[in-house]
Length: 134
Length: 383
Image (cartoon, rainbow over all chains, first blue to last red; front, side):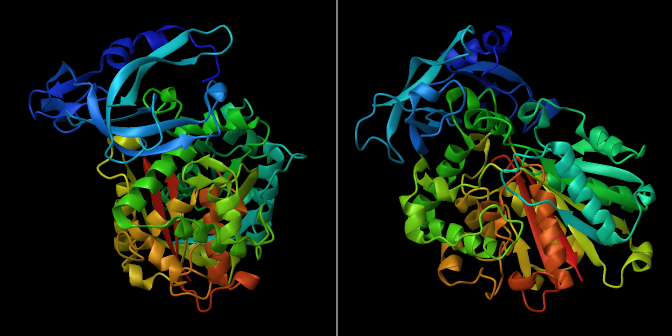
């Protein structure tokens, strides 16, 4: 990141990133998010289809980033977390709209649509889902 | 299986502003060639561990660059597996000898990191994680390991002080190592009071940004005695992979790739964990050493903190860990680290580790991890 990349790099993942669309394997029944392109359990016997996931889950672990990568310098400090969705899959994102005491393992959270970062001075603004306590 | 290590060499590790990647690789390479008592023309191939020269200095194709600088036209290839690049280069070199293709080879690891500003280095290192599903959201490597630490504290009651003890021990060992970036003792208080990088990890929980290179000369078993009276042998190796993203793993507190790589390495070496006299493990962050000591089997799962409390991993302890000072104090030039770990074990087994020497060390282990655990490689060495 920090490079000004071409738009398709971001555009092709809009659906899963904005709408929380993962994949479900019709063979084994496993639900994946981020979406898979091959079922890692069934491989050639796998049959993947898109599936929209519930926007709620809980914090499994978290940290607060204080030394930022390129593009996030103005955001520090910001909390990041691994979240287990109620549908099962786990993902990594930021926690927003939090108060003292919200950052704890097991805290219930829900997805909300937010700006993530801008790709350099002239690059596009990237959006996606962050999570807020409920 | 047995492959001999007949030569070792390293540069000083640190912020080596006055030298470039070429100079680092050549310095470590020529030291190892001289140590082995061979000539450059005896080499059959070069395997070079390097994670990210393209991002750090804008240079790809670095193995050919090194062979060119050495005036050699032999096969030279770069091996990349993030922070495990050095360990993977060693494994590939090992396999090339075992296959019968090569007799004597050079395994190098080199990284030049200080030519980029800190935010650029942070972003480049995040290339070891999942760009689309971790880095996109502003996650950094310190914060990934911080999330492992937070979960480890939650599941096993590991304390903030126990994390700090890794840094204190490794800085002590580093103070005895002339190549280390940090050669000063620190206290638990120093670790706790240093600036927060990614809660709960502070600056002194993190390995630094480092320039450095390390080299080994390997040869097939039958040739070893021609060059040295006391070769060190590699007797086991295991490598395993896991998902790129931490969130996709079965566990957030065990690196399954480490467990599998270690199991395969112990089996190949026909030893058990009890036979290991000392180990260099991948302590890119303090929590990583605690998790590694558990996953390698030095203690039960969840008891890595207790192992530190009891002093078992100190140089005089039952199973000394990171006698070199580890990534924490020697520094972590990402592609060089796996090779540097092997250099320390060879010095220990030769009895040349000076003030860091572990008494009667016969079997040593190296453990090198890529990313947050997507790659792990374990080597076992014997006198």
